[in-house]
Image (cartoon, rainbow, N blue to C red; front, side):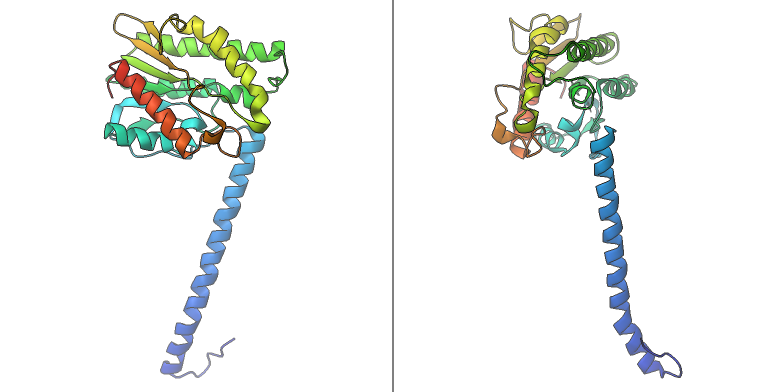
Length: 264
């Protein structure tokens, strides 16, 4: 320690100039440690309690196109970034990592408050399976898992009908791709949704791609991403898309919007 008693001004100045960088470095390290601990705790909370966390909320300049959904959109934000490069606009992104289908329905209800809303980009339902207590790994699927899948389908249908009765002209719904590794047993549940849930919501699923739910001036397009996302396009967590995977998904969404003559 420096003794500050009876120090000349020049010496005191020297002491301060030497101590300040050390003080600043210590404060900086403390800040880093605090941020690190907060990040770890947030990640542990998200993983262990199944809560939701909004990792990406980019500034929007286009509110007539809005995104609702889960971490496929929100975790990295890459799909939004690619869509921005394709459209030249930053769509309003309401997606939240960890969101279950009921929370995504709430996101949609907020979006529907905009009377000029024209297009909704959506996904949902995976966290009801991943965070739920029902076993969706068994083969064949348990009745509990089938009940969860039916619940997801019911919520989706309510959401589609809400969009039809309100302002949006169109919806591009991104269906899930096959996951890998430790989560690979979930693929039977994903296929069940395509075989039994989606056809009841998108009546033309087996005759056209993307599937079309038509009102007087409204269409909902279902995007089957399974043929396009391969294991190499999925991160080491076995669930979320890599950047390359996000590029593929964003282009599938964009192509559906173009094919459906959606506002974009």
